[in-house]
Length: 143
Image (tube, rainbow, N blue to C red; front, side):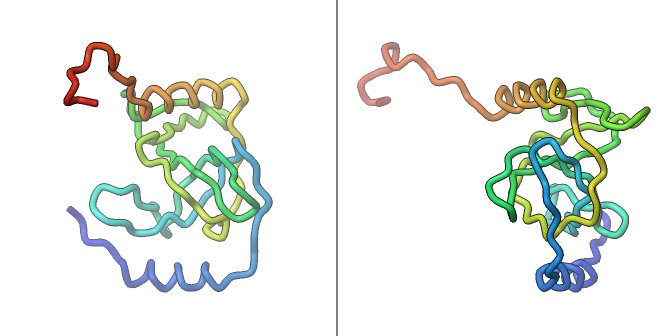
């Protein structure tokens, strides 16, 4: 595992926290966000700690559930692949869904189409919603 520059990231994070600049945003927007240096296998930002992030669910004018994107080709249940710019293939890392503050935004980079967003929602649901077992077939001690 490569060494991470937590010290530089902490300096940037402190600046972002104190910054008064906020972007307006809506669901389906894609922003380059300061994701930072994170622990273990949590998704990091790349160069300058930045990574594109899809706004999945807006909660208010400050925070949203976001999905980090990657350009690494991954065809599995944890990734949804789409294009939001000409000839730019992106993969939404569904397993890395998390809360973001818009203060982390550097710039807006585009928007996912309504069709792709609908498909992404279905893939995300398949990933995170575990079907319940039929309680009628359960033993008394299981309920």
